[in-house]
Length: 130
Image (cartoon, rainbow, N blue to C red; front, side, top):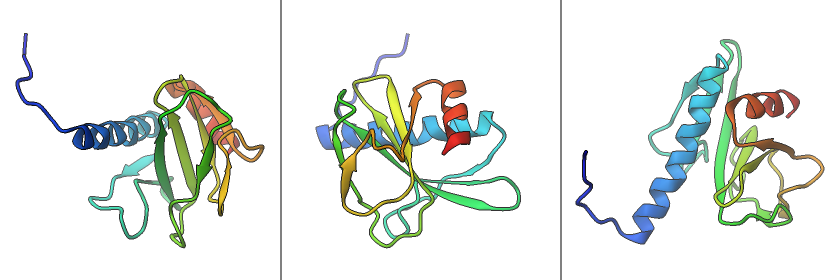
């Protein structure tokens, strides 16, 4: 059995965890038949995952939340970047939300956000509603 002998810093571990949610989302979208692209750097355009149905492209920002409370406030972090969706994953709960881009702060369970259980089929159904 392989043994991991390297030790990573807490900051690196946090970054790895964030990327794991981007990869998870990409795999769910691939399973649903979307073309999925992952930019090498997303600092300027704030696009973690880019998807296409063959005709149109959609930019997605992925955020993971260190909470289990769905009343947690989330804040816009994409500035003037033209994104289409923000997907929030709870790191401690088994839920997430799909949101349109917004300004300022709002509750992650806002009425405009679509909740999903962290499972590919449940996410697919929620994404159709978003």
